[in-house]
Length: 515
Figure 1 (cartoon, rainbow, N blue to C red):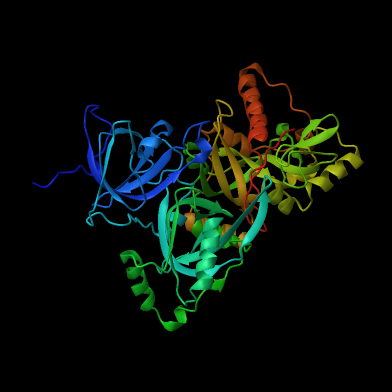
Figure 2 (tube, rainbow, N blue to C red):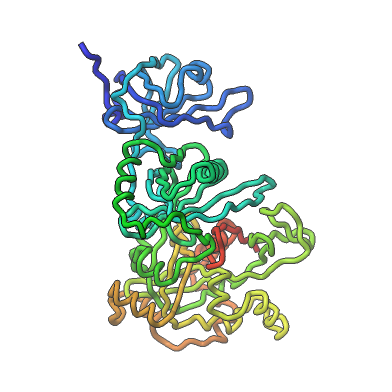
């Protein structure tokens, strides 16, 4: 009588006395030495696959590693019984299964020979699906495509350690946008070695268990340090099927690998009208996860109480800490005798649904103001403008309609606004704004008188000189909210800072701003 095995899709956390029995293939095995305790083995992580192609993650804790490390090997098939099951709560999940398996001291692992279990558990995600995502999902994805273009190997030093990456573009032959894939370290070297040793007109690339990552505001994929696997021109059925599709193309469509200019930015038109997800300001504020959206609105106020510049590191853009008449950069880990003024401007933006505070950083602010924060700060000093005053030039942003690309980040800054909204990109180019409004057709009618904030922001005169003066003492009715908001903004400046997303930047980088 044939043995009966449980299926991975049936695995759950209850009842506690349930004894599961699986027949699975190990498709990925790795150890995370970073988490190894003194005198202990590093934990073992695995992704296993059953005969129906479903996957689940397995963990062998450090105290049990000596029991199983000589038995487990990637690619082998095992019958596994008597293990624990718990929710999978890790940040990057190599499978979409809700649970993960924990080996116990008395877990039984028996090697078997069985060809009924597939060699690979690919679950390819269409490129359009990835590029339509508005947030970096914690689930890892599999992608397959023809290598369409390739950049140069980029080598640099991070925290004193050498690092490198290469950027490629894959075409899934569906007629849509090509997918940008970043390969780091050994993955980059593996690709370059294969291309050198196996000259060919066509390369079919599979990246298994890659993570979704924004690149200049557009979603792409990159390998992870531990989970990912790279396959090039392999004989797997999925690759053969893809090759068959490539062979049906006209010869003119198969012109080999084109050079990829990695610093080439995505155009405003492409980004705002085709690649990004539109939300109204009200919808953005109701969203409860980190995400990226495009929206349209008018800047009605510059929130001067939060300042307009910070003391930045000239080398890495991070905020500097002033200590004993020197400026310490926590990123460069060194003292400087100078700083670089950089913009950080809080603006109040309104559309037909609501209003919200956006944070505008150095690159976009300087582009639209036409002056750097350094030069504007020097001008203020020369004119004798009070230290905490807001220069009139900042208010040139007021009453202009923009389309924005923004990043929503959930942060417990205060009880009134548990999020920050960073401006990644913005434009007020007339034809692009018109095309945007025509596409999404937001209601441009009169503002509702039921929303007092919208009403107050959209009517009444504005006195620039008064806006640059110190804020009046809040009335008792609004004192708590006002103070909470200011404290929240200061915490935001200290903890988050700017994401550099200028069109010339090859890789966005967080900076911490501390005044």
